[in-house]
Length: 210
Image (cartoon, rainbow, N blue to C red; front, top):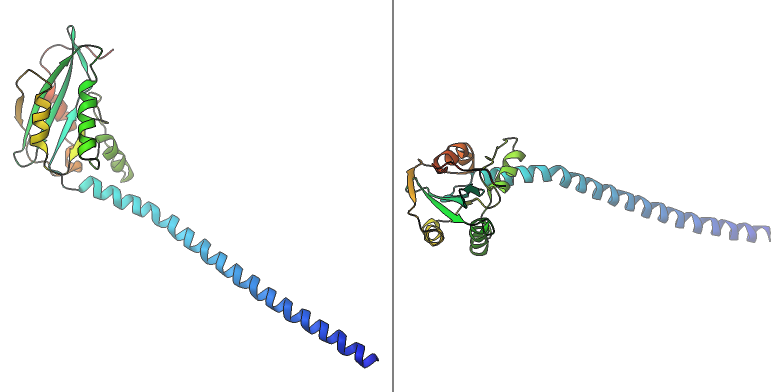
């Protein structure tokens, strides 16, 4: 009887021992998988800043066909003036348009030009977006206060002719053309923003927008 009881106890202990071994093995496997996932997540987190920096570098250095700048409205006597410039890299010329409006519709030009660009070319980048990419690369860009950075865009595809024709329908004045030189990308363009604003400023005495 004692031998029989001993056999039963030993069998039970062996069974539970085997189960415990399996459980420990399973837990060990789960722990290994969790650690592996943690390592992968850590690697992804470490990689994301590099990916962000790479995207920023591509945006800053990507070749452009031209750009369009839109100024913030300024008061001119009893009218409001918005200056719009379209630059074409191949000709190296910048064509400057002045659009006059009343106080109620003073932002009309900015909205309609930005709307047209985003509708037809949704992947074009605004000056504000590109300034953020420059900041990622620790290359701070100061956008002049006179420019509307949200409605000024670089043009990756050469739609400058169509854009110029469209803008010409918004004004009754003849545009002015200035030679700007070759600008190949945002990195070069960002260094000339002050000069661009200076060239497109109206000659008349104007008052800041109120």
